[in-house]
Length: 146
Image (tube, rainbow, N blue to C red; front, side):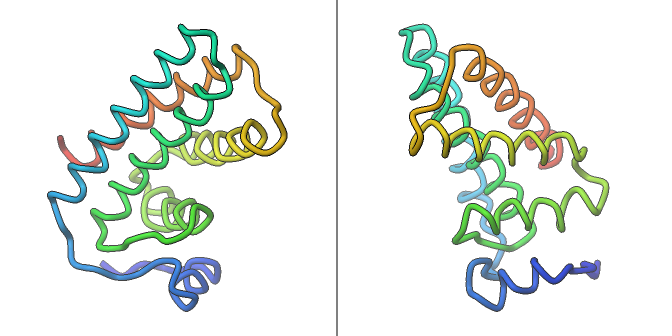
């Protein structure tokens, strides 16, 4: 299958922020395990009244699930932004992943940055991100047929 690459996807490759590698099922599985672990940690942090950390962990759950997807297409990311670009090019544009999941990933990335760098977070937002993380992990497993 030929991927109709947009300029941003090509730029990520040219800059070495997306690297073509062989498909490694053990690495894909490791990323899914990390995703599930981060999701559980986010839920625990929220219960412990730590919404900042829950926000960060929810994002990393989505990040690892996204990495698993991109790895399944033979690419390794070296940039959070390029992971988002690769998800769009390899999955959304191929009609393998609904656009809402990409939008949630991007929103979650921005909210994680707000929490980390701006001390902007809330219990309600963290709870929403955990829900998105759970949905994203379920979708990633469906796509990967796991």
